[in-house]
Length: 150
Image (cartoon, rainbow, N blue to C red; front, top):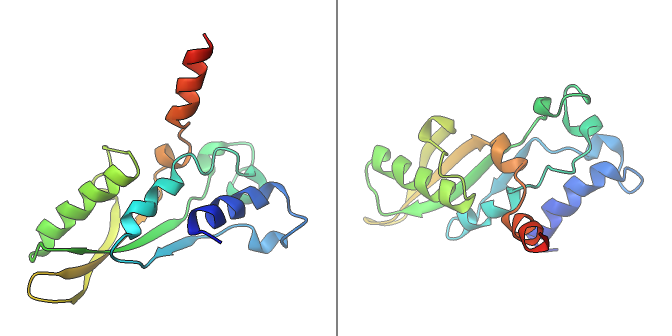
């Protein structure tokens, strides 16, 4: 199954607990370890939790703001040799991929060099909590359709 399709299916299963046991309905971590293209897959998280079952995903099922969103671990390459430059590079890429320009390096909980692939290519790992604003975003397509219906 395609990774995007699987993540969507998995979150949707929180509303249909007949297919999976309840203890398997929630995930706490998502590892995206295809360093060449992993960042581009972050778009799957836009609006992903809009219809998630609050009984499964929220500390308090009556308060959607208590949703427990997963940590995202994403790997990638950069030509930036210095760690600070690499951090800036990945912060910008992650924000762009999630269409969330407000994403900042302060949101990255862990950032480290995995290995230097060559003298000009460096592999890093970035770990961050999925931002609520991304997870609960209504998609632009829905907005466009609603405006066209007016």
